[in-house]
Image 1 (cartoon, rainbow, N blue to C red):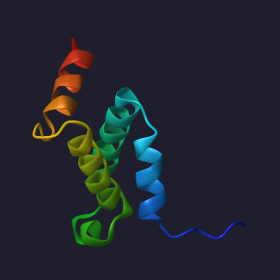
Image 2: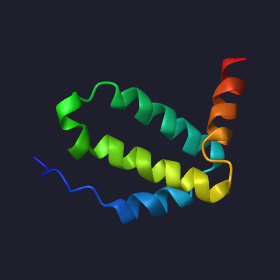
Image 3: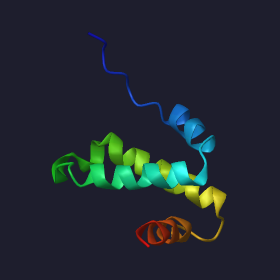
Length: 80
């Protein structure tokens, strides 16, 4: 059985940089859904929340000054 690897934030950030906007937003949506399952007491150490923070940073880097607006707009387009 393979041992669980520690989360590599740098590697994850590089992976995010290579994603399209749709892929990045889709990942954020999946992570948000996954975060709802994380017990409150585990949130400070959760890999899910670390990934969310990195995705938020990646979105901010792609859309300077817009914060999470591009993601929210994407969500609205997907619902329509």
